[in-house]
Length: 245
Image (cartoon, rainbow, N blue to C red; front, side, top):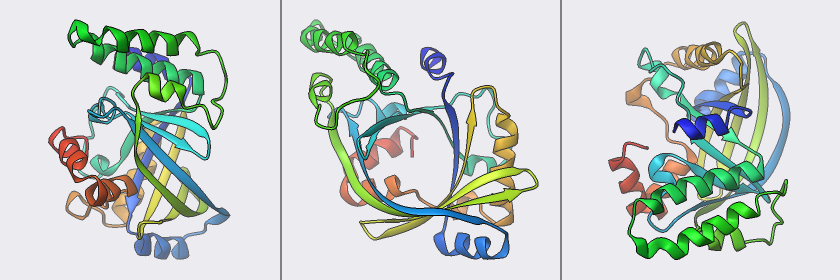
């Protein structure tokens, strides 16, 4: 993960807390918050058939034609209390060339651990790396996915209403989401640029979690957890066994 962290240093640290949507709606009614808009979007998540990415906690997503990847954040310290363990932490890459480069690196490292029979796949990965000079990926360009043997394992639409909440500890974003597979969830998010106050961001999230009375026993599932549990149970079981979910 050391190389991955160096690659992502110019991007964002992403902290998220999942909350029961009714509880979060009541919370919004009690504290000042500004609605910043509503929108609908479609997400597609990709991985290899043997889950090389997600079993290492990398999540490759295409949202309305834009590619992003969440990488596991190694921040040098473990959660100090139960409330902090509820906070999801990732490094978020939004530059398509860097997304391609990181995905290629992960799959190439995995392939290198296999037999020499994987040499043809390594050649395809090298071709992808040679073409990492564009700022965006055309919506219809699926060749790089084919070259890396990546397939879509989850696809769903979300209706989202977003708010900004100014608190003494700093600003947080609140999203109320309704997925098209009949699941609703609230998300409290903080994004921190490289060099920002990471500990302060964690405290912003965990203080709200404490106010809402959240605990590990009352942990709320995110959309992906529920989607995989319902529609990709084998994948879900593997991620549970690997302690990713």
